[in-house]
Structure formats: C-alpha cells, structure tokens
Length: 327
Ligand SMILES: [Zn+2]
Image (cartoon, rainbow, N blue to C red; front, side):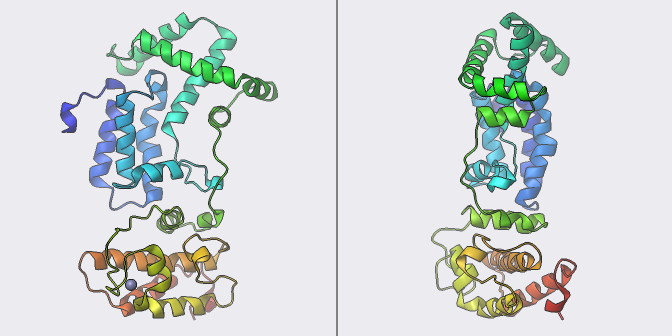
C-alpha cells in the first residue's frame, strides 16, 4: 500500500492530508467544495516549499494522481484539466499546482537575475530555507537536480524575456498570475459563463460537469427510471418518457422566458440568463441527478417523487426565484 512507498519529506504533509480527505469527504462534498478544500487545506502546505519541488519527479506525479482521485475516481484527470481554467474561461479556478510552482520559481529567479546573478546564492538559500521549514536537513533535491530545474526555468524565461521585460517596465511588482499568464498562456476555448450564474456550489458543480462532459455516467448501463434506453445525459434531461411530467412542469415555469428545455440550454447552460431561470434549470437537472443516484442503488423512484422534490426545492430557493412562479 501507499505506506510502503517512500514519500519525500517535502510532499509528505500535503499527501497525508489529501489521503484523509479522500477517505472522509469525497462523497459528501460537491466539486466546488473539493476545489475549495484543495486550495485551503492542501495547496496551502506547498507554496512555501515550491523551491524544493521538482514538478517532473515521480513524487509529484503521485501527488497529482491523488488530487485527481480526490476530484473524481474515474475522470479526475479530465476534471482537473478543465477545472484549472479561470472562471471567465469556463473553469472553476482550481489552481494548477505545476504551473504555480514553476511560476513561483520563475519569480524568484527574476528577482535573483536583477539582484544577485549568481546561481550559488540560490542553492545556498534553498538549503537554508529547507532547514527553516523542516527543522532539519532532509533528503531534498540534490544540487544536480536543482541546477537542471534552474536551467529549465531560465530557458523558459529566456523564451519569454521580452514579454516579461515589457511587463516589468509597466508594473513594479509582478504578481504570480501575471507571470503565469506569460509563461503558461491558457487556451481561449471556453464554455459558456452562464454556468456560473448560480450561487449554489452543488448546482454549479453539476452544471460544470454536464457542460464539460465529465459527469460520471456509466457506459452500457440502462436508465434506472424507464429501464429501457441507455444511460446518457440527453436521455435523462430531455427524452426519458418516465420524466415527461417533470419536463412539462419545468416548461410551464419557464414559459415567460426565452429559455427552452433544449440541449443548448439544459446540457450546456448556454443562453440561460442570470436569476431565477438559471436557478430553475439548474434545480431541474439537480433533481433528476439526485434521484438517478438513488435509483441506481436500487431505490424505487416514482416520477411523482421527483416532481414533488423539484417543487419543494423551488420553494426552498424561493428567495432567489420570482414569487409568481411558485404561487
Ligand atoms: Zn429513461
């Protein structure tokens, strides 16, 4: 098991903590909650040792694998990649640990290039910091490895030196996110931002997973409601005959708006404006998914139950939702 594999001192604490989280919280926390937990409890333990981390090492790969497992047991890697985009580009703002660690190193190198252009000083600082952090000199990266890391990062900076210099002229203190954007520019393909109009983490998480195709559907399984067609998202949300009444209820509520129950609106949340229409579409999906989970594990679910629960949820969220639709 995990215990027999030697984990280097510098990632031991975040690894242990992440292990605890995988055991305890995975099934009770929404994806948004897990992103928040990673930022608050796990990643916060590694920024001060960024200098000591080699993002190409096995150790680090194992750490990243564990992050993936925490996010989602089967599609964790996909989810991490998508969630690591900024919100305005369709992600969840999950910090990309590898890029962030390298950026912190780059920032330090930039400072050193300006102040003390001797690599010896960097190595000296690293060993001093290591003692400060761990209270002892542990088996950290050797000078050989660090020289290589330094070389790699410097090359990266050299490639982008013009951009960085221009940036320097404009601002005195470069921030991590700016250097990160220069060294690791993000893709400009992004999903619709309407997903993020809802404030509820659970609804937001579900919208995100649907729109990015990362919701954990079981290939080859049969829809547990109608027990006829295969399990896929469009079947659940748009076609399942068993849930026709629920669809009608929802259409009735939305009929004063331009939002239709079609693939673009429901699956991709495209063109679903801020406010109560967004909340209604999100709750519609949320209820189907909630009962799909129950039905999959053997509970008998009647359409009436799904409709009643949807109605209750609308009332519960009435403070977000226009009063007229629930009277
Ligand atoms: Zn069905």
